[in-house]
Length: 288
Ligand SMILES: [Zn+2]
Picture 1 (cartoon, rainbow, N blue to C red):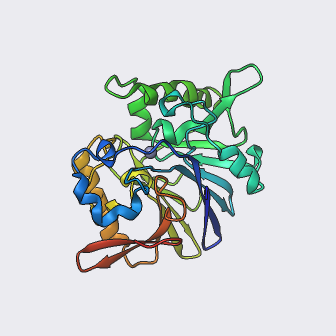
Picture 2: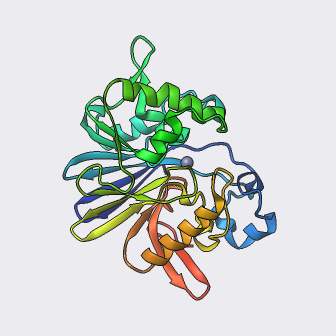
């Protein structure tokens, strides 16, 4: 399954797995977590005991129009992922959503697997915004970090910024907004430090119901219980741990839906519940 579904108030939410990378040994993604520690969480690994996160994003049909939360890996081919190609455009087609119908693209952060479809090649082969009528949003801290050309980042992130995000800026469709502000009605950025310097989630509210698009505060459902586990992409692991504990402590048992782009479809939308030992993940399609 590559598309999941949920409803929050008047919002229709669809989680889309733009791509699935080749599975890897979990110690590659979580270097500080011993292999044996995965045993209680084996259901979140493949049958071979490997880790295979979805590279996902979310599309929301809202009263204000169609909103994308992040934009997958893009049309590709993406050399870093073995020339993988994203399926977002086809998935939107399946949902009856054309590129012109997308009103807003809200970036949680600017890693390559979250900006991929922001632009795509036109007839002349040059990248231009994939969603020509959309306004694209990014938080101030995240924008400033990538805009100044950081040297200590992996090349595929830097290249994606230059080749995929810059054309959106050049077309005048990009708006940089204050951290924690509301880019469009019903959607509010929330600072969730740890994964990138300006990493944020997005809280969507409709008719008193809420969904937090929590971006990359977790890459596996196992981290709901194991909040001390850090994915290797976290620039500030201590901040990431604190963020998970703050968010789960605040939202557990409140009915607030959480959405995680890197969880397997079916397990990507769900609720955090408190139990004796901490927190557990209860996805709409599958429970931990
Ligand atoms: Zn990511």
